[in-house]
Image 1 (spheres, rainbow, N blue to C red):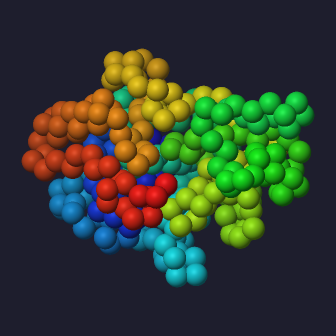
Image 2 (image 1 turned 135 degrees about the horizontal axis):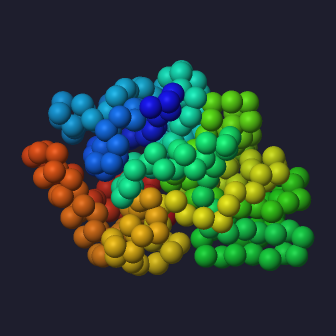
Length: 293
């Protein structure tokens, strides 16, 4: 393998460490070599056994300032520090994947597809300020009572605003990617931005949307992972034909996707001779800051 890695984040709750292990198994099914690094804090990995932890190549303990602002934990903020983590690891290329996801093919295909890119992220649609056209199939995360255009007005940008899907994205460790992350951090820390509150803070996607718009970058309208909330309900055969994997994000899964995920876990654990199982838990039932969203 070249100097690349997959970077995962598990913070705050045991379920995220468990998700990370399940995802690691789905990666290892297709690719035995690529390094998998886990950014973590202790609670998140507390239920994982030594054998389960052995499926990761390295661990980066998250610094408190990466996910806590003014004493309030905002775990989504950690995603905006991934560039800094990648620099510390010393890699050239990174594929970030939300841990509440599973792969259904070799991730090396995507590394090859993105080899000429500095930063690549999926996108569900756009708001075009030139003709005021808007796609509503996902969200722009604008604050209740404000319009999508208010985001552009506030941030002094006049461009196409994307609905990025940050469950999987790629970046090179170079100046162009660093600029995107730096601007996204500035957006996150702006207390007056017209953004809805999500899990005690801002959605990282809002920050990426604004950063990309400020830097005149329009991501492709494409999903790399199947995302039920934006696409609809389909079976695993359909997912395998059209996507690299699937997300189980959101506060509650449909019965169909939950069954797909749990069966997938069981099959992988049997294949790798893993005795433990970490099946889905709906976030709204376990995570206080997600129960009201």
